[in-house]
Length: 158
Image (cartoon, rainbow, N blue to C red; front, side, top):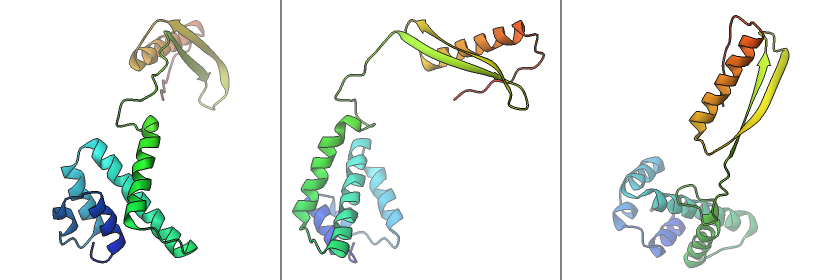
């Protein structure tokens, strides 16, 4: 951190533990790994957002001549974390998920050359986990293979 006083100032402003700021790391990845071991998922998510904002601020300084102080960079990172909390995969979503009971699945029947012989798309009107829907698609695939008297069947799922 001694080579990057701007980043250090932003992290100090945010209250990062001095243990991480004063550590003697020869590689930044070691520094980030140590921090990741100490922080929980939400905190590491915010930390990465802060690092990105420091990097972005540094680029703006170099390419646009716009110099921000540590407080501005920190506040911008905090605002982005709040604004994008809706899309944060670590936390429960702020907007409720639409839960429907219809579960859709589809299948395509192809030969070894990739020629498509048919397909089917359908739905089940009940709440199922993804594993059960895949099992249902497999069952339908077996029915199609049986109806067409196919000897071999290769199943793929995504």
